[in-house]
Length: 182
Image (tube, rainbow, N blue to C red; front, side, top):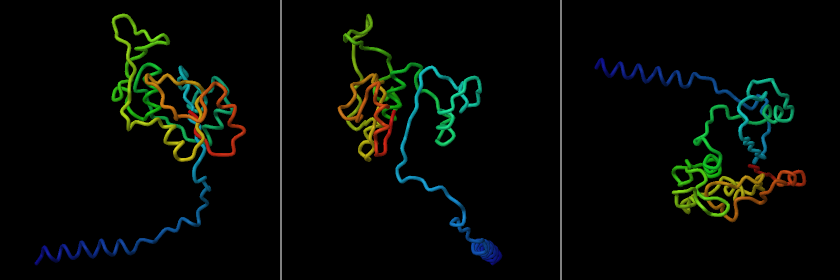
């Protein structure tokens, strides 16, 4: 009987606490209106380090980069899954660890398709279900560009970008649609 009374008291207290809380109406707060699908500019720089104002260093003035950083999203707890560029690029482009898709060895083939001495040349072949991030954005209606970095340790698919060249960024000023640039 005592146990039942204790349970009833606890239940009543929780129920009273639940219904005594005031409903907070957020409609009175001023919320910024965000676009349904925002433009995305993904900036990746090689050998940059965090010595720029958006990350606390004031040695060099970067007004445009600082403004983009202030108005956008900064990822401050990220790390590279590889110590070299192309395997890291494979991970960024696919969202998968480069080891998982066989893209972890640097430069196993070269422009003339000869591997380093003692290694048989090969290229990673991601499984058919692996898509590049840009492909997902294209399927969602984004215009996607890449500023010419295409060494992913695997042959890029036919459709990852609307445009990939050193001049790709220059075309964005003419766009009237949403975009994703890598």
